[in-house]
Length: 137
Image (cartoon, rainbow, N blue to C red; front, side, top):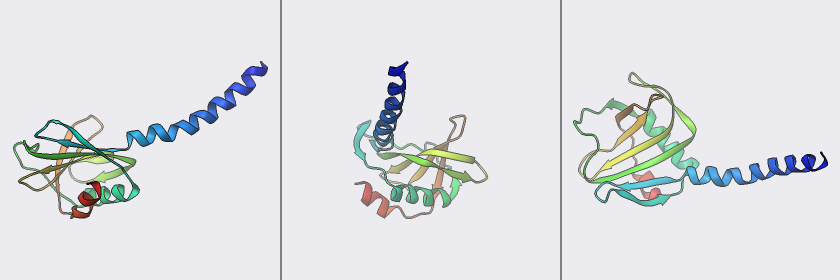
């Protein structure tokens, strides 16, 4: 009984100490090269990146009309969002905890988000992401 009194508080303390390490690894941004078909870089996530992605979501103009929204050349940035960002437009309403920023070599960027049922949505937006891309490179 005496041992249990000491083990439980130590276990709780250790779980709080190691939790940020696990969360930090999950919140990194993955950069996927479409031509090479692999992740080519890991970039750090930050509150500034989160704010930029939030602006992209708020500047959604339309759902894409492209026949194939995933190009053969370019990059996809998988950006985890913590805390989740609310989205509310005519196509989707809810919270999103991840965005995929699709950057084709020869076309305008798209945002790919998933609803609660994992259905993908591809959106066009009118927010300038030059600063975001500079920071992620």
